[in-house]
Amino acid sequence: MRIRSVLFTAFLALTCTLSAQSQKTDIMILGSDHFTQIYNSNNPNTDVLLPQRQKEIREFISSAIRYRPDMIMVEVLPENQQKIDSLYTLYVADKIKLENLEDGRSEVYQLAFRMAKQLGLSKIHCVNAPGGTSQSILDNGENIALYKEEGLAVRAIVAEKMKALQENNLSLKDYLLFLNKPGTYNKVYRLRYITPARVTNGTFKNPDAMVDTAFIDPKYIGAELTSIYKNRDYKIYSNIVTTQLKTKSKKLLLIIGAAHIGSLKSIFRDDADYQLIDPKNFL
Image (cartoon, rainbow, N blue to C red; front, side, top):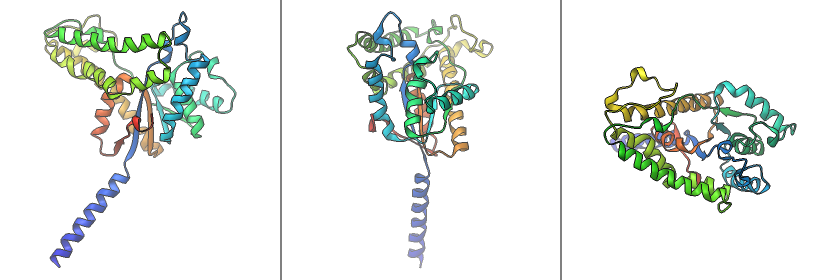
C-alpha cells in the first residue's frame, strides 16, 4: 500500500506539472527598427514604401506570421489605443491605405496592421510605457572608457548594416533578421543593462525630463542609467501581462524596438506563467 501511495503521489505531481506547463502563455518578442527614423528623403533605399521594400516586408511577414498569434502588441502608449483602434478598423475595411497615413512608414502599420489583418484579429494592443533616455547622458565617471568603447563597437556593427541597407546591398528583410539575432540584441542588452554598472562616481550630462535627478546617486551613476531603462521595461511588461489577463490570449506577439529584446526576455524568463518563443523557429 505504501508503494502504491508513493507512486500515486508522484503521478499526481507529474500530472499537475504537465498541466501547469500546458497552461503557460506563449510570447514571441519580435524586434524591429523604427522605420520612420531610418527613412531619409534623400535616399530612396531607406523608404519602406518603395515597391522593393514592400516586397521585402511581405516576405518577412510571411515567415513571422506562421507563429499565428492570437494577440499582437505594439510599442505605442495605451493612451493612443483609441487612435490605433480607429485606424485599424478603417484599414481592415479597406477604407485607408497605409501609405496615405502621416506616419504610414511606421512598423506599427507596416508590420502589425498587416499581420493582424491577415490573421483576422479584431484589435492591436498598445503596451508601450513612458520613460527611457539617451545613452549619451552617461558621459563621465570611473571606468567610463569601458562604457564608451563598448558603445562605439556596438554602434559600428549596426552602422555597417544600416550602410548596406542604404546602399541597397542589404534587404529590409535581412536587416530585420539581423536585429533579431541573439548575437545582435545581446550586445545591445549588455551595453544598456550590464556594462553601465561598472561606471561609478560621475554625473549625468544634460539629462532630459524623463530623468528624476533628485534621486540620482552619483556613486552609482551607471547603475542609475540602467535602472531608468529597466523601469520602463517593467512598465511595458506590466502592460503586456495585464492586457493578457483581460483578453485571455494564449499566443502573444510583441513588435518592439530591438533595444528592448534582451531586457524583456530576461523578465519573461522569470515569469512561470509565460513561455518565450524563439523567432528563429519561424524566421
